[in-house]
Each structure stands twice: as structure tokens, then as C-alpha cells.
Image (cartoon, rainbow, N blue to C red; front, top):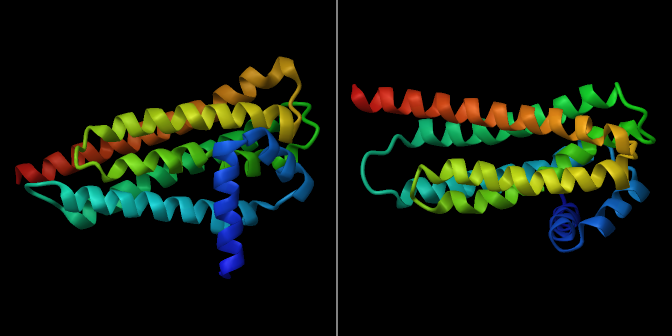
Length: 191
């Protein structure tokens, strides 16, 4: 990856935070592929999420199971975003969207909320993972809702369905992964 590619991804993150409507207009004009949304944009977000998770694990006092916690952190975030993008692709097939090809791209870019909320992961309190998931879901929902109109062109009557199914899939996948992580980790600490 070149420095220019990473800089463009950082500018896109900043654009989604500062002026998301203008950023969605740029996305439509650039018509990026799914690969461009995955690398380096989503990969960079996942990297930041894991880095903040490592800091949170390192700062926590007491018993630590570094490899398991790190893998769980990675799986929780990746599964939530993958379920979100996958459900978005499936639901757009049922809609009369103007640009259905941009649905997966818009889902991946909307996951900016998840990646920004991952900054909370460095706080050494494991229970904040639920708060991080909720904060990320709310901002992701906002970005995704704006993208349905500005980037994908979903008709007004279908936006609730187009938004609800992918977000529900994201919350369920992230929640189930977090529950599984909690159960596995508590089982290991009992032994």
C-alpha cells in the first residue's frame, strides 16, 4: 500500500466525521469498488480497532489472556461489519435502488462509526465493549441512512427495510460474538 492510498483513506474517515453528505457525493462520483472500500479503508479501521484493543488489554490489571482477547476483539468487529455488509447486499436486491452496486460499498464506508467507536476500546474496562458496540451502531446507522438516499438511491418507502435488516444483522452478529467471547473467557479463567 502506498502512502497516498493511506492518506486518501484517512481523508475519507475525516470526511465521514466532519461532513458526511459531501463525502457521500464524492463516493458516488468516484464509484469505488468493494475492494477499494475494503483495502485500505476497512482494513485500516480494523487495525485501529485491534490496536486500541491491545492497549485496553495491556492497561487492564489482573489476569489476562492476550491471544484469546485479541482474537475475540478482531472477530467481534470483523463479524459485525461483515454481517452488516452481507445483509445490505441481500436486502438491496429486493429494492428499486438507483445504484444497487454501491450498497456494499456504502455499508463498508458507513462502518466508520464502528471504527471510530473502537477508540473507546483502549479503556481497560471490558464491560465498555457493549457501550462501544452501541455507540458504533448509532453513528453507523446515521451514516448508512444518509448513504441510502445520497449514494445508493433507495426510494423513501423502502429505506426503513434497507436500513433495519443490515443494522439488525450487525448488532446481532456483534452481540453474539461478544457473548461467545465472554463465555469462553470466563470458562478459561475458571479452570
